[in-house]
Length: 406
Figure 1 (tube, rainbow, N blue to C red):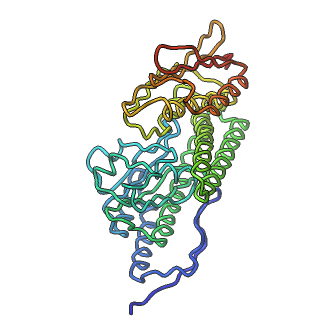
Figure 2 (figure 1 turned 135 degrees about the vertical axis):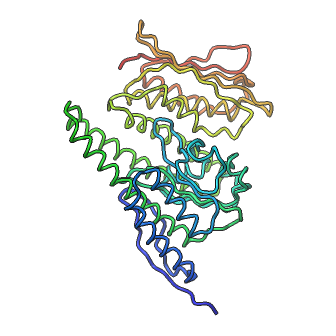
């Protein structure tokens, strides 16, 4: 009978991260454990030797592939300005994937769910799992099982470390915890590099633009993002434990709304100004992360390049989320259609206008989604504006107008 090892370990995640329970009585093959130990030792050495962040990320992907014997690994970086996850480094992927392919951060994206909740996500068979989207890239490479763990930098989500297997149920609990350690080491190294860059920037900054007030505002944004992540984690847990499909759907809707708020804070943090949000970037990021599960439905956008204060941007984002989600769920039959999103600023009269229109079946007496539409009217009132739904020859059009100020 081969020797077995029982392990117990504490969580190594940085402050703000949420990790899996401790290894209690976990039985591990000694050769597998030794392989991970050697890989971690090698990786900690490489971390100090890597002369650039891209090389560090590529080395991380290579080490994980080597120790797990999984052909496909990748490191994804969260881009706040785009609201997506970009494949920054990877092993085993065809040309055109690394540096180009992006994944959404909505709840139907496995890496997106890991980023949102700050927890590892394991999908045993993503081909047939209705909870998660089977992307074209994974399908093209024959991926079956996926394991995602979050990467934290200074307590904030930086991205995701992912391994993708071509066999069903390829990962065990030891893989999850070991990959989390890789991600934590990677996060600490990235944090050190960012700190060095900040120190250099401060030393060469002769304009005095980085005021104490700006630093405090950015710290406040950081704390708010962490709080939103805790809320999403709690909602995800409640959703998994619910036996009612209706309750699960309602909780999922709340998760989408929290994501909309989080994306607004990401846009705020990304800009030099700590007082406004780029609506062009924010609304596009929102629509990119509203999962239609309807490939035959297209979302077309025409958004003015304008910025508005955060406390007004969030209600606008929630309104957009409700209207687009409502159209995706209830407006179309199998033939699909188009959803048009426009955002206009009229500086002459000081008014902003958001319009969401679809060419679907129209509201009618049988169309669902009444709660979401009531929420739209409430949010429009919060903005000091109004929501109108004029009669149109085909489909549905909703326009929200509100006072514009910067």
